[in-house]
Image (tube, rainbow, N blue to C red):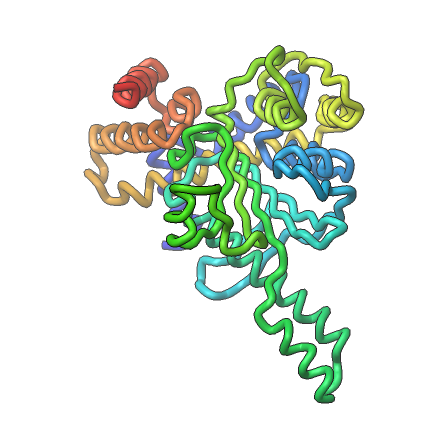
Length: 350
């Protein structure tokens, strides 16, 4: 069975059909067209928001928590990564920015909750690091191109040097590994961590590799509670897709960003269509997950399919997916899914 057939099976399991999908596309397009702003938790809107130099500089200076060496400019780079270490490793970044100091940053907006999220983040950053290492080596070879003893020695000095690569993950789901809405991940030695128990915070093995993880579900600040640029950017990202009117941020870069994502029905037909396609693509990915988990279970029996759907619903709810989306995608009654979500919330509160 090829991928299209597998997807067809998954969609059939979810009770979908081409006719239903066309109607759903039209329904979503109408819904998004009537919104005030693009939903920047989806890739098209996210790129419209942040693929702007002034916005990216402001956002990165806020989210990286730098006290010195503030970023002054960025260049947007290619977003395709192709490393064939495995058959599955062909990754595409949302936004790839390079700062004036040579720091390469991968900024990801992740709408769909994932199993093995930590490993996904590590895998993508590892691929990113390898790509940038090859570019660094090429620059060094260009500077020291000959087979002279001097040039060979200079190239050898940089054999194991790695570039600065940071990954920023904005997650629209509960990241179980972090208690607050913001966390940064580094590589530490056990010995440094042991020493830090009685002294200062441990220094990472290297400052050149870093992960920033933001859990939008845990970001609860209201408009009146916003204190700094990080608060303002995260508030905008979380709420633009669901608010009729965003507050004035009294910041030229942020206010310009709001204008950029304000929907103009005549100008934005294509990006609205892309936003709809992105939403449907997420639904299809959920369909694949359902098929992967429950392929062949009670095949042909309606009650078996419903049982599988509720098991899938519980899995997605525990990953932080909202009840409304789970009910919509799995074609289950919202009240039943909400009951399940309330039960899971009650368990977590114990």
